[in-house]
Image (cartoon, rainbow, N blue to C red):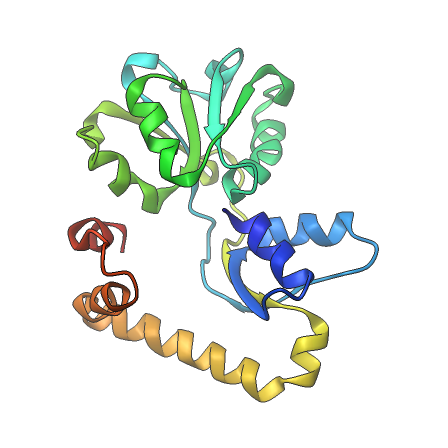
Length: 210
């Protein structure tokens, strides 16, 4: 359901830790007078956020989005951070119309022409190619190419959980760091791990995401 959803679940103590965008974390903390969350491990150096459209829509620059429909889950980090992209590029954020959609249907709406563009992450390019759309048929606008290059996803928790469980937090961070190194050394190991948990995944698609 996106970074904002994951952050809310940790802040409400439904979960102990999560993987989510640090920009969404900062926004959450800025709006909350009570519950706060903290990053304990930065994973992405640059947020992999982008706006994706079909070339036939002729959306090649931010100003082309005015009057267009954008589809995204409300809690997706790329949508949460869209106002920063708009501010950096002089785009009026109220000039776009949002379509609320699940992550599973976002690319499908784009492929069917039911939305003009989507906000998403670079890792989701593999998903749209699975729908029969070649990368050459897409226009990609990375947030980072337009002056919006914050850190990306991190591992987060609450200050209370970190204070009460410092060894657990250290072990989780160490485990994630070791897993990332193992995935780089042998990507098939990480795909096999996902397959064990989610038997119905498309291994080729997940390899492309990685």
